[in-house]
Length: 240
Ligand code: CA
Image (tube, rainbow, N blue to C red; front, side, top):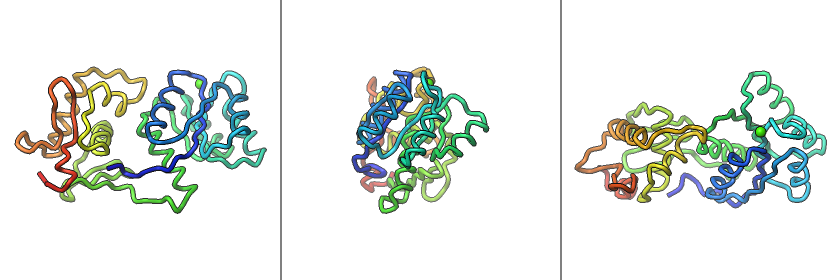
């Protein structure tokens, strides 16, 4: 059960740092998007003319012309493609400048893949009103709100930290699927973060406590040496 099923939309990623571009591409493809990448501003502008994207993820610091210039050129061409600006530069001035050049949103590095995906989905929903859907997922007594990044159990707020929410999000949107600790690190932490395997266990333990998870009827199941999964019987209504 996914929070939503995005239709196959095309995303152009303009980013010169190959590891980031690759990670963004792989994660967006896993979400069902068609992804093309460009390693420079000029290449990105060419790609967009060859094959129009539904959304552009644009890094500001590029080797040739910078992201602002790319954005300005797009708008000068009357290309109103939604643009999510991605950058290590997070000063207020950059943000204001980016938005004044016509960026739709702005995400500072380091960022989590889940946050990037959520922002992209939000922009695409705004640009396609008929695809609008409530961003609340129900699983047994749990309600997970992807707008407020919070969760409740039987209407009581669980007071999750952002990291706990990210982990919960990964598990609950793929009920029954086992996630290795490595996988959880890739999906719930920023790409630059290097948490230990042990840190995953610590966060899972805290999350379980907040969920009111018990060993008798586990909501998050542990599979020795394999990882964790959201108990499918929670989702199918067999409330713990
Ligand atoms: Ca860059």
